[in-house]
Structures are given as C-alpha cells and as structure tokens.
Image (tube, rainbow, N blue to C red; front, side, top):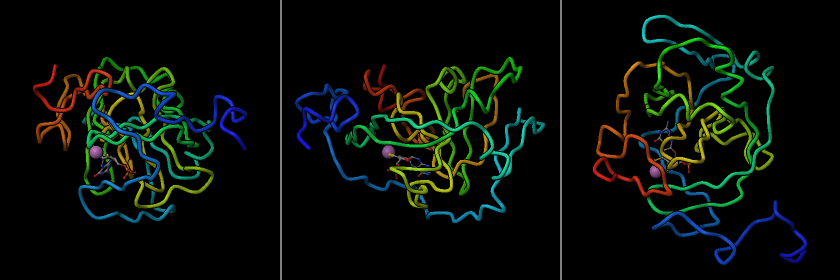
Length: 200
Ligand SMILES: Nc1nc2c(c(=O)[nH]1)N[C@H]1C(S)=C(S)[C@@H](COP(=O)(O)O)O[C@H]1N2
Ligand SMILES: [Mo]
C-alpha cells in the first residue's frame, strides 16, 4: 500500500510531521526501565486510588477489564529524544477510573509495581488525555513495556507514562516522583521542552 492511500491513521514520516523541539523520529520501541521488570500475575494485580490515608477505590483485574476500553493512536516523546508516532493502544480512560470521584486534591502520584513513581496534575489525567493501557499494537502489553498495564499520557514526556501501574495517590500539593526527584521537570511538556527542573 502506498503512503497516500493509508490516510490519516497511517504512519507518518519525518517530512509530514512537526516533532517537539530536540526530538528525532524512531520506528523501534526502546525499553527504558530504571530497574528490573516486575512480573505481576493477573490474579494478584490490583489498582487502587488513595488519598494518602485511605483507599478510595480498588479494582482487581476482572473488575478493571469490565470498565469501558478504548482504542487510541498516539505519538510518544521520550526525554532521551526519541519520538515514536502513531502507536496503537487499547486501554481504559482515566476519566472512567476517576469517574465522579470528589476530591479537592489537584495532584496525583502514580505508583507502580517495583516502586517507580511519577507526579502530574489530576487535570492532566482527565479529559481524555490519559489511559491505563493493557494492549499494544493488537497484542497484550509485553512485561518490558509495562504489562499487564501501564499509564499512557502522551502529551507529556514518556517518563510520566508509568509502566506496571498499581495505583494513584491523590495529593493536595505537588511532590516529585522518581525522576522528578533526580532533576527532571515536575510537568514535562515536550512541546515546551521541559526536560529538567530548571527548564521553564
Ligand atoms: N514503572 C516504570 N515506569 C516507567 C519507567 C520505569 O523505569 N519504571 N521508565 C519511564 C521512562 S523514562 C520511559 S522513557 C518510558 C519507557 O517506556 P518503554 O520502556 O515502554 O519504551 O517508561 C517510563 N515508565
Ligand atoms: Mo525516559
């Protein structure tokens, strides 16, 4: 099939696309993990939302998979400068997860199996911008890429897309997660090149 007939869902090339500043295009899918890959049995998997004191919501794999799932096609931008375009995922929108949850908290700490954390404003998890994905390119998400399930929040640098997610802690004030505590930006907008803590 030629490029033209693939339509807007087809894979774009460097010439059709404006990448965020300082990024280059890649077609492979590098694995970037700060530690070993945890292997989580589906029977043991849980996802919880807490407010720092109490668990407010809890899903096991079965109840999580009963939530409505969506297919999304999104571009990924890693702070190590690779971008990968048109990646296809299936996942549950954070809108379905957070639902009608009433909270005056403004920030979230996303928690992973294996103890990785990353912080972001709750507003960035809502409004169809973030998903908990469990399939990638029509296959169950591979453990090295975050399976059984990972956060996908494509409008921020990819370190915010926590692999092996296990929950979200709601916070009244912003606090740094793993990379943010090591000098990476608290927000991480690739279009504004917010790589390190002293970038505006
Ligand atoms: N739990 C966890 N999530 C993580 C990481 C990690 O080390 N642990 N690395 C982050 C970083 S820095 C990047 S670039 C992406 C990489 O995702 P990939 O390995 O699927 O390419 O995952 C992010 N999510
Ligand atoms: Mo990264």
